[in-house]
Image 1 (cartoon, rainbow, N blue to C red):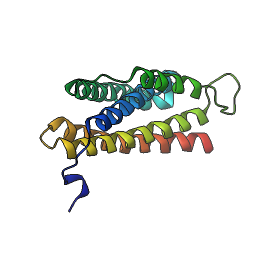
Image 2: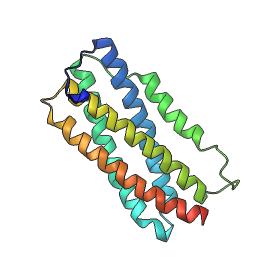
Image 3: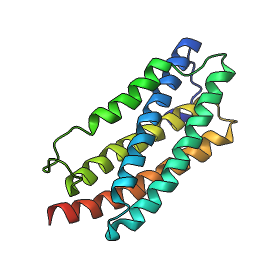
Length: 167
């Protein structure tokens, strides 16, 4: 039996924490998508990356909107502290050393895509879990399929970025 098809019980408090955590992670993810997109707009060989990131940004925002609706259905709202923390963590991530002191590097692109790939995999887990809890909610199934596509696309983009950075 598929573990994701079993009915899952989760207390209201745990649902709030779980959904708030994912909403905060999506806040950080959206910020990182924008930074990566903006940093690559002038790089001719990464126009596909910029286009994919534009689409990804819209998709993650749609998913975050649904997570927030699910919180509202429980009579809850996103945890403001967690949302702010997600935003701040992304900003602090900009301070990492990337082999160049004051500019974007090929290594920055690789590392950002690795983080975005991890974020997409986390969203896949989110939608698997929510689909198990809300099997009749087609949004969960649709978002699950879409996040699997995101993982595949990001893997391809990461491979291209790695080849450029390390060849």
